Length: 317
Length: 317
Image (tube, rainbow over all chains, first blue to last red):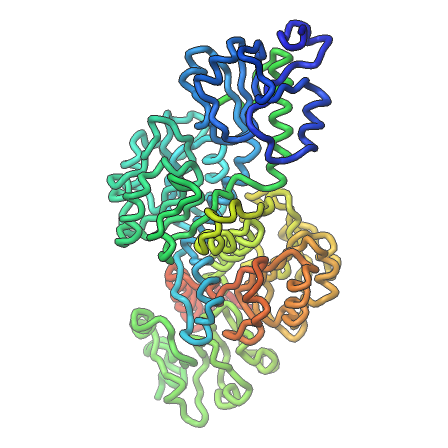
C-alpha cells in the first residue's frame, strides 16, 4: 500500500484518483498510466488516502466526495471552468486546485472573437438568409458594423480574456477590463465596477469564472449602461449573465445583439432567442478543438508531475 | 462652359462625371457638391470633355463609354474591385484609375477572418444545429479545428491581403503569399506559383483582384495541392475560383470546407452548396459597413481633390 499512501513516490508511480469519465478515450489514459497509478472513482473505498485527484469532466466534486478523501492535497481539473468543484471546502482544507484554462484559452479566445465578428458582420444570419433563397428574391442583406475602432470591455482578464485582448488589438479595438483586481502587467484601463466598464464600452466580452461573486454579474443595470448599440459575447458560463433579463433586452432591442456559447440551463436555450437574427447561438463549443485536447493532456500530466515532484503547479487557480 | 472643359479649375469647381447610381444617398452628394460640379451619366452629351469620372457602383465602364469621353484622364472608383472598368482601354489611353480598396480593406479583412473562423470552428453550422433543437435532443455538436498554428496562404497581398495577414498573425498563424510579384516590404514567404503556395498551406484566403490572369486562378489542381484538410476563403471575386470544380471538391470532401462571400453568378448560388455544413455562404457583404462607406467617401473626395490639384492619387491601382 506504499504507493496508495504516497510515501514511496520515488520508487513506485504516484497514485492519482480519477474523478469523472475521460471524454477523450484511451491515448491519454495510456500516457497517464506510463507515469502514474490510477484509481478510478468507481473503485474508491469509503475513505482513501490519495493525495491528488484528476477531474476528467464536470461531474461535481462535492463536500461529500472531499470528505471521503481526508489526505487530498491537490485537484487537477482538465477543464477550464472549475465551478463543479466545491472550492470553499478546498480553500478551508488547503487543497490546491489547478485548471486546464491555459490549454483552452486560445481556442476560447478565438471563439469569442468569432462570435463577436459574427454578431457585428451578421455572418450566421447572412448564411441563413442566403440558404433560404432570399438573396436572389429579396436582394441584398442588411449591412453589419465595423469591428475596428470599437471599445471592448473584457469581463475577467485571465488567460482567456488576455488572449481575447491580444486578438482584438490586431483588429484596431480599444480594450478596457473588469476583474477582481487591477492587473499591474497590463496597461488597459481598469474598471472596478462592471457597470462603469459597460458605460464606457461598445462591446462586452464575458470571459470570467463563475463564482458566487460573479453569478449574474451581467444584469439589467449593466446592459442599460452598455446601451442600445451594445453587444454582449459570453464564452464564460451561462450564469454569469441574468439570462432572463438578457433575453428581454435582446427581444426589445435594448441592446444590439449577443453571441452566446453558454446558457443558464444547457442544453435548453430560451425559445425567444431561436427567433432572433441579432444573436448567434452556439452549443458550448468554444472550449473544444482536438488541438486543445492535446494541450490539455500535456498540461494535466505536467501538473500531476509537478505535484509529485513538490514543484509549483503549472496552472493554479 | 469653362468648368465643363476644365480650363478654369482655379476659379470654378472641378467638373466630375458621375457614373452609376450612388447607393448611399444624399449626404455624400452634398459633400461632393460643396467641392465639385457634378454631371450625371444621364446628362452626358454624345461627346464630353470631362477629365475625371467618379464610379459610384459596378455599372460597367465599357470601351464605348470611354469613347464618348475623349478627354478623360482619371477614373475614381468608389468600389474596391475595378473589374467593371475596361482597364485595357484605360492603359492604352493613359487614364489613371483609383479604387476604394483602402477604405474597405479593413472590413473585408475582418470578414475574411470571420469566415475562416466560422468554417474552422463551425459557428454558423452550430447555430443552425442549436436553432433546429438538435442540441437538446441529439447532444453535442462535433468539434471544430484550432486556428492557431495553421499555415495560411494569401492569394493577393494587396491592401486587403495585408490586413488579413496582420490579423492572422495575432492568432498564431504562419503566413505565406502569392501575388503578381514578390513584395520587398514583407518578410512572409513568397510563392510565384499558386499551386506551390497551396501545397504548403492549410488554408487559402483569396483576396486578389479579378483580371484575365487571375480568372479561375483557383482550380482543381490548386485544390488538389491544398489537400483534404484544406480550407478556402474567398472575399475577392467569384470568378477567381473555378466554382464548378470547387463545388465538386466540397461535395466530395476533397477539401475540408470553404467560406464564400462571392460567387460566379451572383446572386445565384449553386444549390449543392446550400445543403453543405462545411461551407459558410455569405451574400457579398464583406466589403460593406456604414463605417467603410464613410471612409470610402473621404477617400473618393481626396482622390478627386488630388486630381484637380495635380497631386498623386491616394489609391492608384
